[in-house]
Length: 543
Image 1: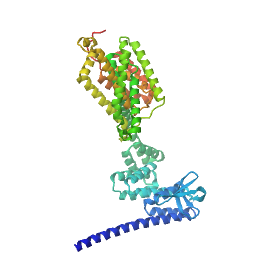
Image 2: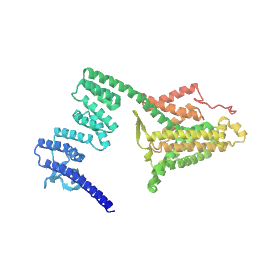
Image 3: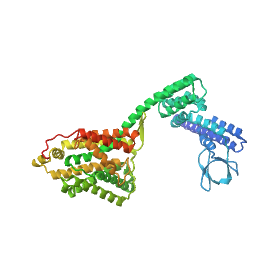
Image 4: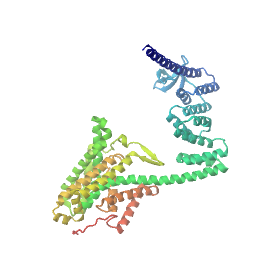
């Protein structure tokens, strides 16, 4: 037992001694840094300051970074009363004093009580080089990676020695690859041999991207001979690659726009297809869905802030119900009395759209309302040279989910089958006992409700204002007519086709003229196929 106790005591003593030794080393390192920094207060001339900077950098301790950065920025000052050195920050009437080693605030001082340590451009360059060395050797992986990326963009030839040392000791494969790219970039801006520069060009060419293109374009402009030829060939190769990715980016933007058009048009495809009613207030159903999202988020922010990331999921059924109820009111109160009179129906629904816009404007005001993005819809990521935002990606997924759920509902549920029957032959459906007025109401409710949930999605990428729906009503009609009235597959194909076509026309014709050209193309297409891409087939008995 005594032997065990002795062993335990020895372990405890060893641990205490190790901790003491570690603390002593840390303290001695801090003391050495502080001593060197203090010497700046009495340094005479730039050569002495340069020597102190190099001594600090030679310590290889990241703790010197704040002091050196402040010195380069002109924020390292000496307190006149005791020659103490501080990093300073503007504090209004005076300056805030910050310890250059620990980073802790040490009170305030009048601006007249401190004097700036002056540096020239040569010193700033030396400080920058020193900071580069320190960050490349930082124990933090992210810091080393950021340093390598910065050197790559700046093509700083003075960092070659530091890069060689850092590459030799780098264990992380990703950071090492970035350091090698930074070294290649620095070589192109140095006096190294042409062979080394050609090898550097090959490495940067493999990396590709716009930064590589800019770097190699500058290299081509300022070099001659073999290096110029190799740089030119690399520039042409990267430009071809970027053109390919640019086409892919346009396709992605087109699909993204198409998904938005699909959401806005899919409800219209139902109402217009089943009832043959040109509902000019359909866009306002989208707008009501967006404002329902705004109100839902406003309540959640005030009362249940922890549920904010769920706000869109909570708003979806609410937006559907609000828009569906308004749709039923419009159908029963106005449209039902105007069947067979398309012009009067168009004018009446247009009047309803103006009333709804003014009503929303009176309640919420004419300005745009803020609808926040949940965390899972924020940010972006890259695939190659494609920039993909999470909110657009989720909207595409959401629009496809809505499409397929609606497709199943129309083909597998009793109400869906009745709606299809009314679409193909209203009089025959009525003769077989289907209550066509009830189907009309439910169709309008369904189409309006889908427009409402479209508003939830659109609130994430567009301004929520009383005019929101007007931005999509014409495009929605174009999608429905182009795809085939009442055909959901036609709506899907039409939305994606028009979305991609718009995005390819915009760079050449502009946004407005691009839409006009699309409209002209659709008109010409309808002359050949009056019933759209995917026309419904049925033996209608009415004229």
